[in-house]
Length: 109
Image: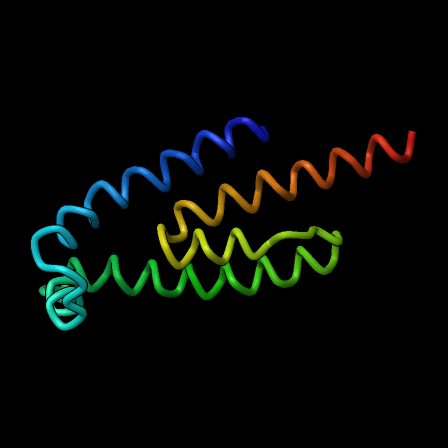
């Protein structure tokens, strides 16, 4: 599963950024326009709210699981969350978590 998570992390980074970079190229970092378009209608607002709630859940999940399993360098997951979104951070953290769980199993043998 760890390689599936890694592939999903790559896709979860490239796909959202493929939509964000053209916006930044055309309009720059125009925050007002960004939020205006993000909440332009009920459907886009639905997706925006879904992603925002998922991001909060992701922050809590990373914080809790990283302490529970002693996973280090989780800052990269938070960076992925900020710069690419949940679709990057979730599979990246699951990849790191899978590595940690596998190393625990090997240490027990």
